[in-house]
Amino acid sequence: MQPVCIVTDSSVQFTKPNFPGRDVIRLIPFDIILGDEVFQEGIGAKPNCLPPSINPRQLPRLHIPDQDSLQSILLTFLQQFDQVIILTLSNSLCPLFQEIQTATLATKSQSRIHLIDSLTTGAGLGHLVQKAARWVLQGLPTSDIERNIRSQIAHIYTLFCPLSLSYLYNSGFLDRGQAMVGEMLNLYPIFTLEEGRLSPIEKQRNLRGTVEFFLEFLDEFEAIEHISLIQSCPPTNLESRILKQHIDEFFPDSGYSEHAINSPVAALLGPRTISLTVVEMMSG
Image (cartoon, rainbow, N blue to C red; front, side):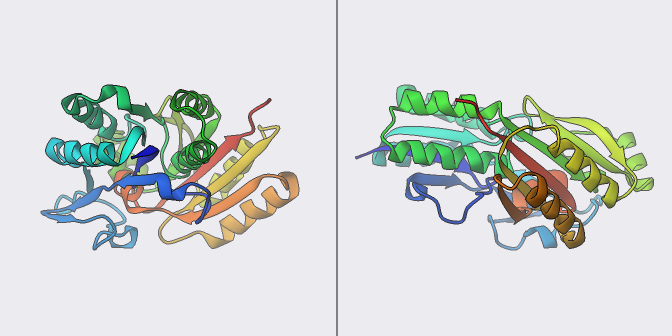
């Protein structure tokens, strides 16, 4: 039996395609429900297949594995690994954390399963998982890995600019009136994740204003370990070049990665969502 594995969900976006420890990572997939159909992860319901704005006949949403499936998944991991560290996307974005918590109790193996709400998703979740995998390779005790992960969470900051506010209404993050008015006025709202919850902080009139706000946000940091831009579907290539030029000039020592939005995040916030994740350099 191998010592430790890191389990996460398929909303994760890794900042590097190959990194040390990737073989100790396991994924819990999200299927996508679109209308009356359920599409398996990555098949048939890719971001470019989702409607730009939701209509009553198509209500995209994430499909979380049921309790029997989750218990079976956990028991499989427990047969292969002595300890299982599970990092989920923010419980405020999706209740996977709660469902795994319930499934863990049913396995009666709570002492071997370490469940952590990352309070983030996408590239922020990917950063945490990559760090955790590296610590597993270094042979750190599970308790130290868990403590290090929780310390890292406080240094991850994420901005979202979802242009399809009907998705936020569908996911329960906005009321119907706010979503309708926002889409009618063609607003570019900007949200941040505070303790894992979407919190509105700014409204812009166009994409250029959104990018300028992203740049101002970056300039508030003294030292940045990594910056990730999640591109909408379709992508905003001109604006991403402006962002990259600013990073090259003012944060030359920071890592940078660019990704296309994935299906789980697109189903929650809409395919026309731009996101910026900043990992602050930890002191010491």
